[in-house]
Amino acid sequence: MTTTPKTWTVAGMMTEGPCYTRARVQELWGRRKSLSLRQILTLKIPARDRMWVVWRPSAVTLTQRNTILERIVTRAVRTHAGRNAYAAAAAAAAAYAAAAAAAADAAAADAYAYAAAREKEYVRQIEDTKAVLRS
Image (cartoon, rainbow, N blue to C red; front, side, top):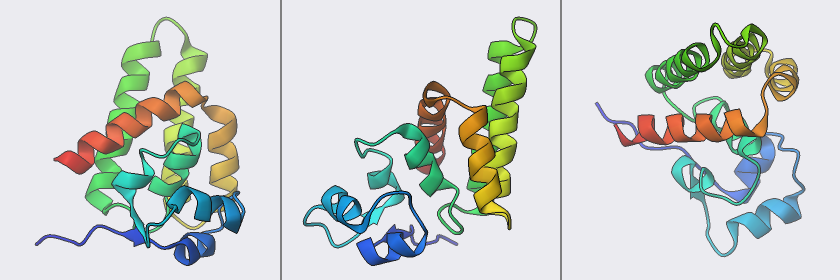
C-alpha cells in the first residue's frame, strides 16, 4: 500500500505554527500552489527549520520516522562515542526531541531540539530524511 506524500499550501503550513510570517512562507512557495516535503527539504532556509517540517504530524510515515531517527542516532554514536560523550549525548537528545515533536509535546520538544543540536547536525538529518524518502 502506497501513501500519497503530504503537501502543504501556504495556508496549510500556517496552521502548523511555523516561526515564519505568512509573507515569508508565501515568498518561499513563490507561484507554487503547494510544496511536498521533498521540495521543502531543498528550500534555502536553515536546516533546523526544514527538519521542523519533517517532524510535523503526518509529514512522514511512522516507519519513515523511525528509520530517520535510527540513522540520526546511529550516526551520532559512531561519530562521537569515545571522542566526545557530550556531543553524542546532544545528538541523541536532538533525535529524541524530534521524536517527541512527532508526539504530543511538540513545542517543548522543538525548543529542546533547537538547543541540543546545531545546524550541521540538522543538515545531516536532512540527508537522512532524503535517503529515507528515496527508498
